[in-house]
Amino acid sequence: MKPAAGLTLGLAALCLVGLLGVNRPAGLGDVVDVRHWSYADYTRVVIELTRPASSEVKHLPANRGAGRPERLFVDLPEIWVGRRYASTIPVGDGLLRGVRLGQNTLRKTRVVLDLDRYARHQLLVLRAPHRVVIDVYASRPPLGSGGDPLDPRLPLEVRGVHTVVLDPGHGGRDPGAIGSGGLREKRVTLDLARRLKPRLEEKGFRVVLTRDRDRALSLEERTAIAAGSGGDVFVSIHANAARRRSARGIETYYLDTSNERQSLRVAARENGVTPGQFDLLDKTLVRLRLEENSAYSALLAQLVQQSTVSGARRRHRGVDNLGVKKGPFYVLFLSSMPSVLLEVGFLTNRDEARRLRNPRYLDDLADGIAQAVSLYRERVDTRVARSEP
Ligand SMILES: [Zn+2]
Image (cartoon, rainbow, N blue to C red; front, side, top):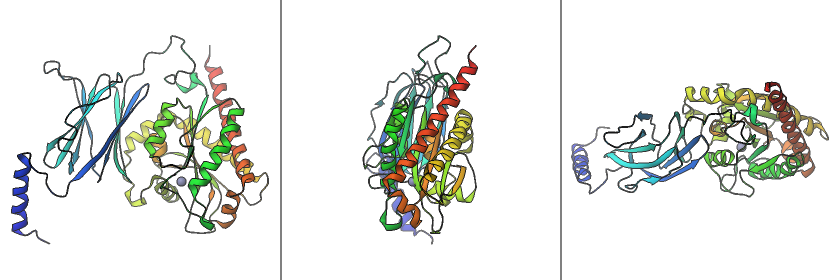
């Protein structure tokens, strides 16, 4: 349909009004919120929007003459911010000085990050709700001074495994999968995490839960809690769903850009997007993240899978081992430590839903997962010992 001439004229008039700072063009999205989190070697900035805005990050060197620091900027087309963030949002964590947002053109918001230190960045666009996530990394402080073995900035080989972050999937207004008899995934994941915590503590781990009650939590909040707690291992707990009621079994995922159809379907569900919306992960960035933690995540996934299945089989027959798989899970991508996502069974399968309501079965699963994390610590410690002179 061709736009009527009157409408075009009307829009032009509206733009003119906008240029004078009086009004905004129709049809633009808004900035809902700007949040940030600071860690030892990176700062995360999240901009929540009412509509998607694809974008790229551009880097500007410092301009001493103009008194401007090194900067990153991101343009958000079709987003209106007006003068809402006219003054800088101060961060001041030694890495990021602050965040500024302004109306760059009538139909474009510009986000500027003023930097104190900078090595690289990554950008991720998330949906439901729409968010632009910018992680800014600074170079790590030099190693070699001996240092505290718990220092989260040390590489894993030196640091060992002390803190386990358990991430019970979903929560609050997000029930996750709803299964046979109305069993909700968010309840199963929290129940299991609560049983797992004391078992890990008994083995000498420090345990952090991303949520310990029924509340909604965004993926970046979950991973921010994990990074902020100095976690060494991240275990996201979920329960599966499938249209085919006979689908059953336990499977463990670690991050990859896998295009396997079944993995994509599970990842889409856990990411809160449809499989069609899946071109959002920047493959180069995923590769970068994979290089950092992939070997450890793969080892962890292997151990978690084997040991959870063994636990489940202790008192039950017919537990299918679906094995270790790779998938593009946002929660794993956003995590900065070796991370896995465990699917403890299909809520849509009547037998498995019945089991997942059974406290003894959950205890068996918890025993299995705790055993896996303990084995993982042993394996990492062995590597640490070998790397010592
Ligand atoms: Zn889930």
